[in-house]
Image (cartoon, rainbow, N blue to C red):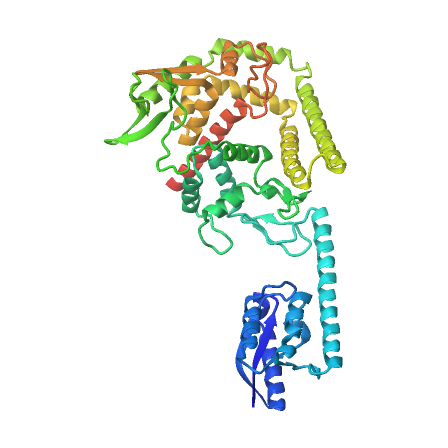
Length: 516
């Protein structure tokens, strides 16, 4: 009997788990029995035939050319190849003395007519794949334009079926937000972030701990802000799924990544790591643990500044915050000033300013498209810049949506005054990451000179303490614009102080629940 190889193939791993491979194998065995052929070896492949380079298919061809078998039996023409390159190699087998059999059709590869018929079927199969690919791409493009993501949901979201938007995973979505918050704090490297977020229980789709590559993929994926970016084409679409991460937070994370603000590896997340410098040599005060205590050391060997204990830094920070607390008289004076300006339309002016900013960013997007059309920039640069502009635009729209109404603004003002009257209490009750944020936002210059700690308050804090500022919804000082009444609010210090307060309440609620 003539020895033959049997080749069976399905397009996907999932399909291979069904009956398709078994059905092909059975048909080939029946054909071999009828023709008096012996199958000496089977080649099974679970990969599409639309693309060349299939390893098992190529291995089979090499063995046939070496004379390992006299023939090859396939189930159908499209099981062997659906691209003309592979079919060209396969159709040359009869010229090398290899018999080719098709189990479901009576094709004679020893005749010109039989080979012509097989060639025509192969061309039809290749054309079918090309048409199928085009229609699939059209369908995908249609979904993307609708704001739908037609692929598997990223970690933190759940699939809801075809034609439906992804929804946040109630268990993983909060951890995704925590990951962005932790990295944006500048206190975590990718490695230490991976360790912390895996400790908190975030897992990938296979229910395994996240890898470094997985962490980085999540941090740079704008899908979590509501944007869909196709990596292969660079095209950007506005998704209709609910965002997990605010655009402003996503921007901060990208800045941390680009500026390499975090170390490559962080073994110990000491409280004030990276916040203090030596006032004499301007070198960093690096933390180290000795005999159960944390010290911050100047790394310049000959510098008169040596070390200072962390608890000493803490005491100096509390003392400085206490000196910056607003007195009851200043709070009352500021409250009256705000009351007198309630009808000044300042909030509406701020709203108009943000709207103008949004309009300017939209114009930049239009100009960017014109540059692409004119050939001034290439497609890759266009896609990169467009993605950044889309994130900026989303952040501006987020800021516009977050503007408080007059009633909420009034409540915010009163709450802010209470916070300013007890800055030390706010710092004492804060978590470590929140303490760092308070110090970063309260003091612009943080140095150690020999054994003396110097803390220079930020301009906004000086102005607020004087009781002479005008509240406009936020308190980030823009020092390039002089004048005690000009306060900016992209990421206002007010909002950050409130966030610390809210976080404290959250921790207290958790502690109460645990106690029960």
